[in-house]
Amino acid sequence: MQLRIRTTDTGAILDELTGRIASAPNFFRRTAVCLDISELAEIPAIGPLKGVLDAIRRAGMLSVGLAGNSPEMEAVSTALNLPLLSAFRAATQPASPAQSATPPPTPTPAPTKVAEPAPPPAPPAAAEVGLASMIHSQPVRSGQRIYARNRDLVITTGVGAGAEVIADGCLHIYGSLRGRAMAGAHGQLGARVFCQEFHAELVSIAGVFRVFETIPTELSGKPVQAWLDGDDLHFALVGG
Image 1 (cartoon, one colour):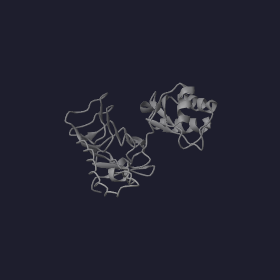
Image 2 (cartoon, helix red, strand yellow):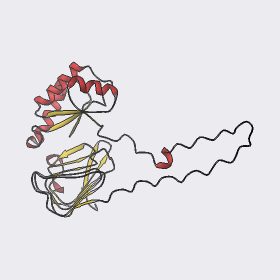
Image 3 (tube, one colour):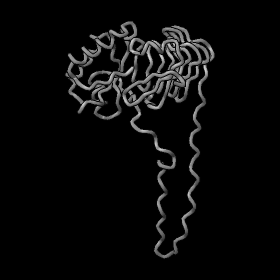
Image 4 (cartoon, one colour):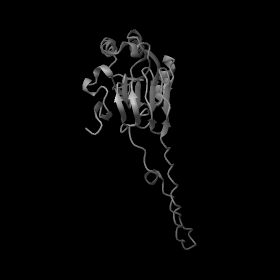
């Protein structure tokens, strides 16, 4: 799980985290989090960051890494003795092969020869074929974790309380969802979660999450879809 902060005010951070944790104390207790400071105006000094880490620990969670990939963040990770992980959200969509390919340089004719026509460009390399959806046909029981890397995850049965289902793409659950569902695990903002019977402990898309206590009660037990709009996670009946 990723924790994105917008201030180094430890009092404000502790107040916010305490309020969030109160909504689902059993879920957040000693939860491992990756600290994201990308929304701060500048990378803070090590002293204030140590204060932030202490506030996170006092709130009951454990900081296990930092999000980022810049040289400055590498120095911070070394000073704090925390691993540096890639940023959670994808800022932009990758360019298509046609957009990202660099055209071959135009050959310069020798001074004493007539320039020959440039050879036709080589055909573009075939785009990598997307992976087929991962299909899991057994019940996902408490304590189990199923992860579909770089693809959608289809669960043909149910997900029990205390279980986790995670996908880099969309999640499709053709049964009861009682555990935790996390789609867009590497920042795919367009990912969605679909389930036939909604009782989820937590739903997350691209790092934005809501726990069951904050979701409209009228959706309980119904076929539900979840999607992300900006920083807001929305829920609605499937087909509604």
